[in-house]
Figure 1 (tube, helix red, strand yellow):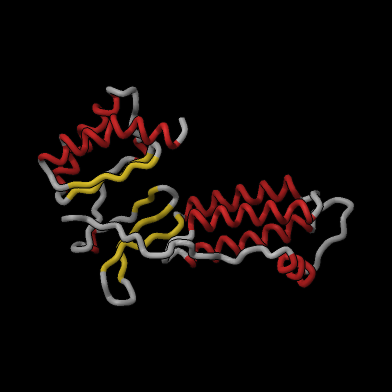
Figure 2: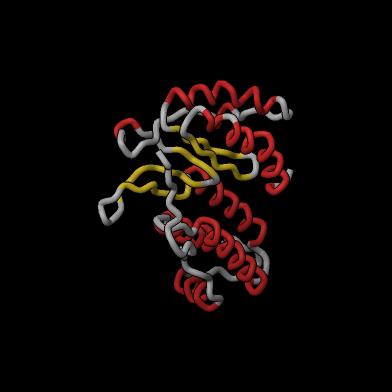
Length: 215
């Protein structure tokens, strides 16, 4: 099911139910994308009641909760010592403090997602290593731009930079494994990288879209 269709389906299965029934008896909010969702509640008991009810609600629509991804955690700016990080849509969310000393929700690429992205890139390099550079580098540039457009959120530059440096290291390694082609030394590879204009890590978010709880 495409993300758009999944969004439409969950809108009826979960979103409308949450707005018309769940929020009648508690303070809460939900965020849905494709077949993933996160719900936040002011009180733990409300979260427990929702957790007990949501599975049956989804079953009416032929859907099941992914138990390995479903949990109740503490996530409050008032009780930081009890807080747990959580992951959603490839990002890790955690409470932190801004440069102004304000409590904010910080976001970075989820560590597991970063490892998977690098593993996928390694496989791509293995498949592409014998292609001509004028074919390989435009594809690389498109990949990096797509990655930065998705993960380029304010506060996530460290993860972007780590991905960027690992991509350079992996590509350098695989280009030097090419059959019947001359190997690069590091200076030659760096010059080639610059010549093709491979983009640097970039934050594309223009303003901090801060998660806000109305409770």
